[in-house]
Image (cartoon, rainbow, N blue to C red; front, side, top):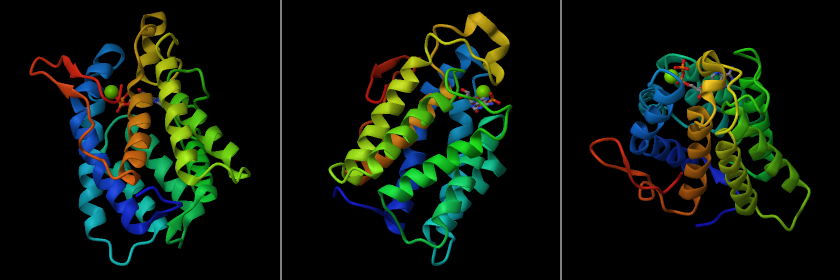
Length: 236
Ligand code: ADP
Ligand code: MG
């Protein structure tokens, strides 16, 4: 069902699918965080999106803005550590340009991603690209969608595909970086050689949006063995 816009119902579906993808990648995200952090990122994200699902199910007559704001408030409330306030700010600030709207078009998507990213950059010392954080995945995604706004040849789905691809590249590019923000920065040069967990969850959230709009969610997720090793890499 490729679409030109995200409706209220599709956004609710995207958020519920985000929980499924966080659950399916919980061990992976926690494994990445064990390398350069405190091994809780997957756990944090699952806890957060569980409350998101719960809170969204009790909204009456939601619009895009109220959904995104509820997502942000739920993450802020339930996720401990850095990621709670960071993702909380992303969705709360992202809700502002979509207040009262009942769908998200290409322009709205650019506005919400940009406002969300700016929100992230107002806390935690204001990360910029190159510091091995979620900003390294989100910043190129925002740029990709913004570039598509004035190009009628780029459809909504194409813009989202470009954003997702850019986020994935940004995520991979965190591997050789030295962490300059957050817990991983305490490691200094020892953070080199590891993929940033937050950049990975940011990419996964965009991929979930794209997959949901393509009608194929919950299926293509990374599979893990009981020892935590990766059996099949789907997203990474
Ligand atoms: P904590 O570090 O408190 O345990 P999480 O493990 O849930 O929190 O999240 C860690 C992720 O948060 C990192 O991988 C990084 O992407 C992101 N992060 C940490 N600090 C910042 C910051 N100041 N700006 C942007 N992202 C950050
Ligand atoms: Mg952590």
